[in-house]
Image: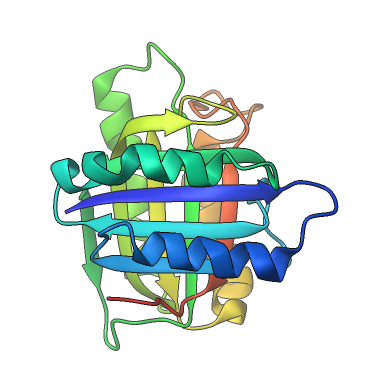
Length: 209
């Protein structure tokens, strides 16, 4: 599979409901196997106003629709886009496997970070679902292509049981602030994520898939 995530910031004065409706129509016509187009929920950080996630059978299927989709996201009522393209990474599911909230984190590991350090960082992220029961599914992938505020290197996705499961047990869990936060904390010697991050989430109601 080959996936695309776009965090869309609408231009001032644009009609969000109309924009979402038109984006859904275009996304369904893209040839994607799975389509999610939803307004973001309160509390996102650099997460945009609209979250789009498209899943294709392979990179060739995405390339076939990339240019038409670029015209969609380049329209005047969209002011800024942070986005990534990526192949399936490492992930898993719990029972039940589907959550009501989809969350995505776009991040950039600092250039020159040793491979062994990156692998330890990735392993720490992937430990989190084993301690946090509100995560119903998860996947960590390395980015193949990026647009926006940073040349993103990783995309970290989860489905949560509900919004409280994201804002409470996940963000406040000891495994988060004691194990994972050190990679993001500019005052910690282990920090490797120095650029801004995009923390975005929405209701998990796909149109297809």
